[in-house]
Image 1 (cartoon, rainbow, N blue to C red):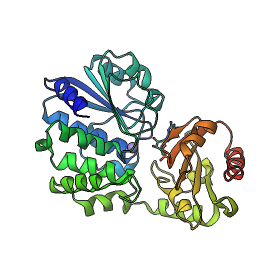
Image 2: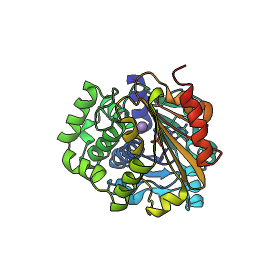
Image 3: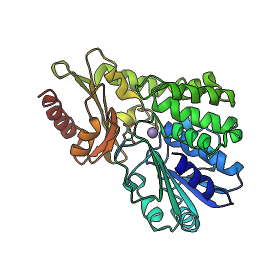
Length: 333
Ligand code: 5GP
Ligand code: MN
């Protein structure tokens, strides 16, 4: 850690052209850690661009620096040029280049020094020169804070950095409730509040800022689309593209939905299946020792964390439900 911090401090000691990128379907931790680092590096006099593979949820658009984010899809040529000319590329909140497709080719080709900061399992150690990976860490945002601290740069913490990192930690810990939340996490949160993060405002902007359609969609899912398998302690919620259209779906509207299924008494495995952008996407969640990253990897070309993973299915929503039901049947065997 100290060694990594020293190497990183050396790398950023002179003005550089820097790209920060994060995984597809960026979530609160992806954007919070990327923009938190962005605000630090800008203060140090670097030229910094955050490039995300695709769009992200509206509830993250208030984050300081949001307007400067480049979305790769639709800005391919400019993004490729910036990436080719960069000196440093930060890879945040992912551990495998396939997670940033279709931006992965430009990153792979670039001669820039690559730095991975991440908390996912089994990092691909060939994709970056400098790797700060801690699979026990609650969030990449916490790791960004730890690096700032280890580089003795906490004097640069300002309101923008604090808000971004707070969002990353808050969203990836389910508001500080998952087992990955430690005393250290709370100490960091205290420092972020001291640096200007307004906790009540941030919770409100992220969690209490839904469109009416989003809440109606939630009601529909819980009332009509919840399948329970009590004998296997499992649940599935699914949505077709047609259903999403009915509720005027916007990116982010289904975020967290799977947790309602997991919050039911006795349920320790929950799956959310949705047909989006011509694909069938899955979110898998569990409680305890059930490793959903292994299920995601084995059946759905995906991965993630032990209790929170995702993947894709090549067949219809109905077929995907059947596959998931088979997985559920074998869970307790
Ligand atoms: P979510 O269900 O919220 O989309 O994702 C939960 C976790 O699984 C996140 O840590 C995310 O990085 C990971 N994840 C989601 N989708 C995929 C995927 O298609 N492939 C891999 N490898 N990980 C995924
Ligand atoms: Mn994360």
